[in-house]
Length: 178
Ligand SMILES: [Zn+2]
Image 1 (spheres, rainbow, N blue to C red):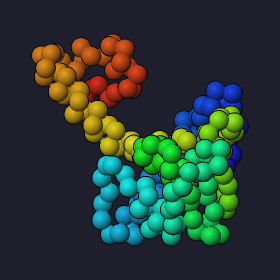
Image 2: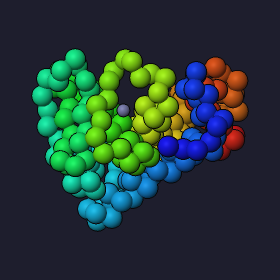
Image 3: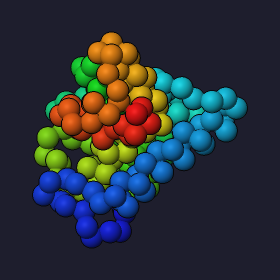
């Protein structure tokens, strides 16, 4: 687990350093996969293939007890997913379990849906999953392309977008479009 006490347990927020550590761990895993398969990865990030190639995990899908989204057993090298979950949710679960392996080295665990929302390791694994599924470099590339389209369509400068609420939320590097 990341050893930095600035984590806000109640609100599930990380400091910039903690966030960066999680992002770097996700990037490292993608690089490990790229080295294993000898090719570059592009979206959508193939998390199931990453689990199989990097950690030699077998993925099984079944309707799990109590709707548990993921059951990881590193000793038996298997990851069980809940067949009742959507494919997107299953993908997130794989990415989440990879977060536990990469950040916490937990050999066996069941990840529950509801009752661990304030468990730090669960929040870290969720954060890792989000970063793994949408790596920042691809996120920015896509957002920049979208913003360029927006600027063309409205016939405005990038600077005009700066104070627009949805774009502020994106924390966009607008100075590139002035
Ligand atoms: Zn978990």
